[in-house]
Structure formats: C-alpha cells, structure tokens
Amino acid sequence: MHDAVPLKVWSRCGAAAVVAAFNVLAEGGGVSGSLYASDVPDLTGQRFAIFDWYAKRCHLVARDEPTELELAEDDAAMYVLVPADDEFAVIGIVDKYVTPATIRDQARLPGRCVVTLRVGGQLGYTIPHPHTVLVNGAAVEPRREDGYFTVPCPGDGALVELIRS
View 1 (cartoon, rainbow, N blue to C red):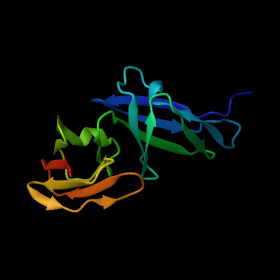
View 2 (cartoon, helix red, strand yellow):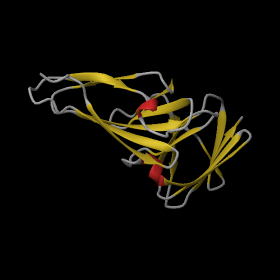
View 3 (cartoon, rainbow, N blue to C red):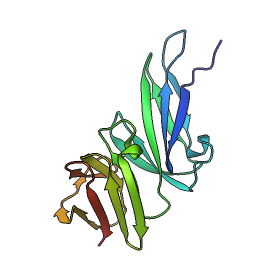
C-alpha cells in the first residue's frame, strides 16, 4: 500500500522556485498533501507569494505555512514560489510556464521595484498597497486578478516600474 500523496519536484529559478505536483498513484483515485516553501532547499525568505499556474491564483504564506494540494486521478499542478519579504513579489509573465525566467533583471529601491523583462506578455505581481505602474515610461492601469495584479507588457525587453503610491 502506498501513501495517497502527490509526487512533488522542484527547480530553482533565481530567487524563486517552481514546484510541480503529480498524482502518480498506481491504484487510481485522488491524492492530497501540502506544499511548503521550506520544502525547497536553499529558498530564502520568510514570506512567499505562491502562484498556482493552472488556476491562475496567488496567495501569500509564511515559510512554514502549508498550501493544501488535492489532485484528481492522473492530475498535475504547478506552483511558482516568489519571495515576498518586502512589499513587492514579482511573479513574471504569467502565461509562460517558468514565470520567473521571464525576468531579466529586478532592482528594489525604497517604495519602488524596477523590472526588465526578457519577453512580453502579462506581468504578474503582488503588492499590498495602492500603487502606480509604468511600462516603458507610460502609465498603465493594473488589472486585479485572483490574489495578484497583471499589466500588459508588449514586446521583449519591457521596462516596468512598480511604484508605491
């Protein structure tokens, strides 16, 4: 008899991590378990944004706080874990599987985060405060999603500024 828990594999991508969970239960049926940021070796931080790639949802958790997983037979899930110890957690382009790999560079300044992207698309991020977004110097209205925000970033190499209001 095997435990009915998901198989989890992870990969680091800069300061972030991507975790995939699979239901590989030979007997069939669903599995359930938990994901912790502390499951990923050397992932630094005490607070994390956990982005559920397939469901397009995000929530904030403490390092040792569980995110519950439930997978139906032959199901899979993918999560992006981004440190959120300061006020900004930049997820990356949310329509790419490895969202953090879409970020070329990121600079944190008081009340501001400046991001240079490798590719264009919808940039996802979290911030708990009112804010302004500039994309290539032009003001852009962020769209509120399920636990995070997105802004359109056309073309490769976009420069995005997230500014606390």
